[in-house]
Length: 500
Ligand SMILES: *Cc1c(COP(=O)(O)O)cnc(C)c1O
Ligand SMILES: [Zn+2]
Image 1 (cartoon, rainbow, N blue to C red):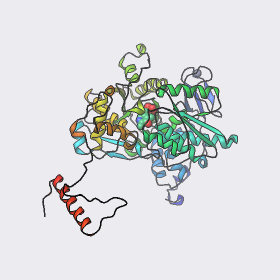
Image 2 (image 1 turned 90 degrees about the horizontal axis):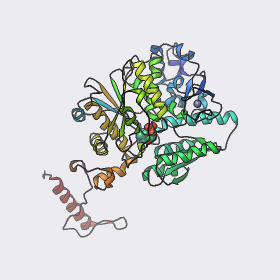
Image 3 (image 1 turned 135 degrees about the vertical axis):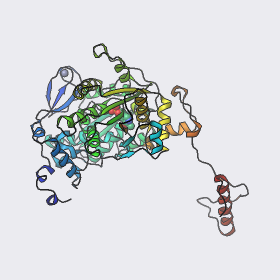
Image 4 (image 1 turned 90 degrees about the vertical axis):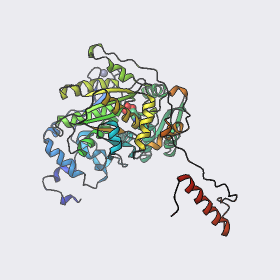
């Protein structure tokens, strides 16, 4: 819609201007730092940081109902910087000039309702939010759009054009970082560190295709992360892991969209997210808190975090009910089909601890739960979801398995509605589906395929046929007639078709 066609009272709010006062805040010592430099950890105590808007007067000046109208009208605006996650500009990073925002089509992913068959199985209505429909096919694009927009801004301010952006990854972060950096190729060169053999071929092909320098390292993700952190401390590189708190801000858009897509009624929702490095659950919690504090939503939804029993440090932490007795211990991970979440020492754990406490306090009751699921449940759930019209990856399967566990545990009741994060596209994780279909899992996964969920192509080769077409061999006349007739007959036999 054209600017002049919007209601007069909305027009002044359509195009936001930089008006926030963002600062890094340390979760260890409460120290505050200027955003004119890229910081990943506290220069004083080494703890992780969060970005906080110190000037909330621009948010408070507008009531919740008006914010709702602003976002609903902005949905009709056809201007690239406001078409993605920055529709919620004021709540994400209200310091970046609109003309420096990078938009590659991220965000506003669909909510797809489960069909009756699936709802019957779970006993509770639910939706998948398909974050696999982001440009690099995972939710990581939300955070990367924010981080790279900020880097773009910083580079313009400081006249920098030779930035090296680096990240360690379980696959999807590197695909996303490489994609956004490729768009800014005159300013940023992208380097990604991957644990050799621990990402899928599709995930490896993505940064290669975007032109990134791909470095393979021995070990698992946690080991890559240590190397990247050391690099960021010792050398002049921009770190794009979720230690980079600009990414957390962008990922908050996941919550904003859920609020908007349910017309700001989220009190009866249970939002389910897999936990790996814990950046995503941090952002989801923080996003809902921001909308709640601004009066845009009047209730906080439940949040269900899910971990595989092969990588469950956050689950273990919250097993202890008494907060003062909890202590975080990293775990050694075992192979997991939810490979993107196969992390034993989540970087964002201090953020989770802080935000879960705030969330439960503001909700007036326990609203965040962490559940654990088996590898078998993750795989079965992914396949069952996809057999009912979804496109979920193994981590999306983990969300469904976790939703079912949360229902069994009594955390979610039948009057509630699940919103399950399908964090990536199933095609990125097709290798695990292949292993399931071919019963080829390494014994360490402890996965036995259920025959009714297996599938394989059937080669059609009619017995009475000895001449077949090939790319360099066209069949003609009687030969092709015979081929078509015999092949159709064989298909009819396989399918048990009746002649008309
Ligand atoms: C990164 C990732 C996760 C885990 O998210 P965290 O923020 O690390 O907890 C889950 N699923 C997919 C597909 C991912 O790429
Ligand atoms: Zn500190």
